[in-house]
Image 1 (cartoon, rainbow, N blue to C red):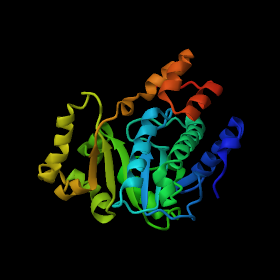
Image 2 (cartoon, rainbow, N blue to C red):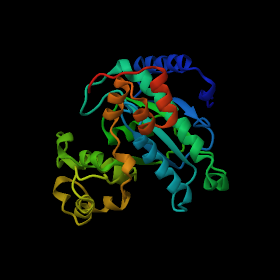
Image 3 (cartoon, rainbow, N blue to C red):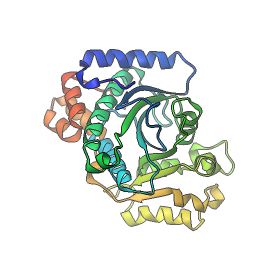
Length: 296
């Protein structure tokens, strides 16, 4: 059943997340839900599962915007199979960074706060009420560092018996890493590693373009998808028809918010910046718990 985290003290929530992490780490599970907002997975089984996977260090307005914009659009889109559900996912192993397990309970607690803020906004929308679709949000852990393996672990678990289609919500920077051959050295050709995700499972991606030029102009970013469509990546193992399962959406200035900037502001005690760059409940958690982070 869902837990009402809004009435839970910070200490109680942190204790709960610490226990959930310990239980997960002592198990052999590759994926486990540690909390649910607005219902359990046994109620309103989802047909489409939106997945926001991040280090949440801390959750920022960028995370909020990626999830909120995607689910708001899905509620209005008749082509999206309903019910929809959101999964906030944290990987205890990272493909690029060393794990920092000591901070994980705090990150999980802040993910719960993010979920509460998202649910409050989304479920008050006219489209959600019209569809009688009270969107549920899960917070979960996985040991898998790569997207394809994460989706496999989710599908292999007993958490989502309805076998929903997965839609990973990612920024363009993450998209380029997903299609980077260096992460798949044991596959030949390397990008054939993505075939189980696109071909076997039929999963999708929703990619938000970056609002700056770090990864090229918007036109150059869109050209990446055209190269895939036109078969220019076939030799690397990427199939042209995968482009039909990838949606590029325009940039939002808030999606470029850096969690590093938030951490630095918190260390200085600059709460105006923290309040500006974090969802309300997350900002409150950061300030009340006087969190600080080691440099990643």
